[in-house]
Amino acid sequence: MKKQLVNMKGTKGGFVLHLDDQCAYVDLVEELKKKVSESGIDSKVDVQLYLGYRYCSDEQIKELIKIVQETEQLIVSKVQSEVLTVHESDQKRIESQQDTYLGVVRSGQILRSPGDIIIVGNVNPNGRVEAGGNVYVLGKLKGIAHAGVHGNKEAIIAASRLEATHIMIADQVQVMSDEHVKAKNQEEMTCAFIGYDGRITYDQIHALKNIRPLLNVSKGGS
Amino acid sequence: MGEAIVITSGKGGVGKTTTAANLGTALALQGKKICLVDTDIGLRNLDVILGLENRIIYDLVDVIEGRCKIHQALIKDKRVDEKLFLLPAAQTTDKNAVNPEQMKSLVEELKRDYDYVLIDCPAGIEQGYRNAVAGADHAIVVTTPEISAVRDADRIIGLLEQEEITAPKLIINRIRQHMMRSGDTLDVNEITTHLSIDLLGIIVDSEGVISSSNKGEPVVMDPTNKASLGYRNIARRILGESVPLMSIEDEHRGVFSKLKALFSR
Image 1 (cartoon, chains in turn red, brown):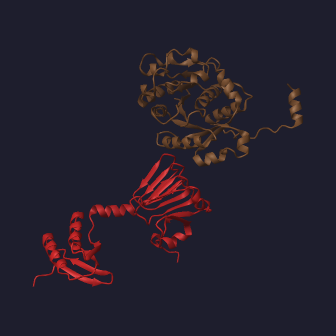
Image 2 (cartoon, chains in turn orange, yellow):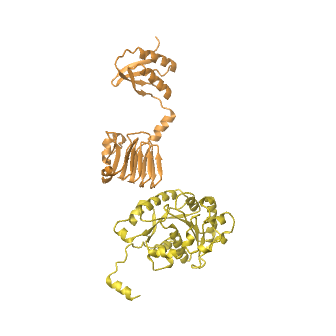
Image 3 (cartoon, one colour):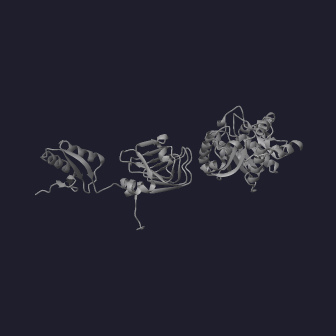
């Protein structure tokens, strides 16, 4: 009997469509169309696509999703794959890197980094820091800081003294006007992050451990 | 081989030209051979403050375009015998008449004959600034205790740090003693920590600076003036002496010392 190219499996998190990663792409599309049309599901269900070790371009992924969703029963919640292109892996590596800058970020200067950025020194008014990841300032942050410029809402901004004029995380912007004086008045070691309400919130640095546990890399200290 | 120092500030009206004139004169009084270069082409002032306006025949643009030799354009200040010279800026053209390469070779040539070449920079961060900084080895940033001047100083320091010159030094000009004491202006410490560069000196605000500038005579020529003392101290620090920072406190004179001063006139 011919090997099935598309397998639907039920898991705790919903249905997963396992797509064969060895056959030709056209065969796969063919079988996927057949499979979803005879799925026999009448209520709306979330499915995940599992591509295995097949590399699909963005357009191919879009096509696969379109085929599945044409049934109007199945909704693709996630596409998983075991492969990354060199470019994507480089991007991931760069974003997880840390850059250190020693000195003052002065008025009119823009400091950019694809990953996290650590500034040992002040960020003066009208100085700007943009990071793909988190922004850490060992000094006074009196200028503008933008963390998660590529849309990472988990990014945070932490400073010895947070006296910034503008705080931005992902697509959220906060102008530090009088309403936010509370944050300014916090003695020192303040951090900014996107809270549960989707807006920028402030807290003391020691609270970060609970707010963003993933930032923590435990090495010793037990 | 001398050194070239650019005097700059970013913001206008903080006292770059006055500082250039006074530091030049103070260094000349210390026996150094000084050349002042005014790079504010189109809006020249340095010659007026030095009282040399009527002796200009050739200017910086004439030198650069080869219409005259450098020594023909240099004006000697007769008050400080054979020590102080001025290369005035042109008044009829604008900053784009000169480019940084030309300024660099001009300053190199002047450095051969002078101990210090002081370059007076125009306000702003455009062509004029780039010309002025091109040939410099060191930079002095002038600011006043006002937030706007400090902001611009911060910007200019950022730009200077990208040039191939030594770390810029700071002069805080026009300090009003009573306002600084009462906390109405930024104080010296606040400004230096904010800008985080070395402080070269402070100059207190004095009416004598304006009146002597109007007479075309730098205030350093008057040894009793407090601003003049500030400039003299800075000149000594440039020469490598270690001079303590003057206090910004006025002498609180009692009745007796006032009376004494009255009779000792």
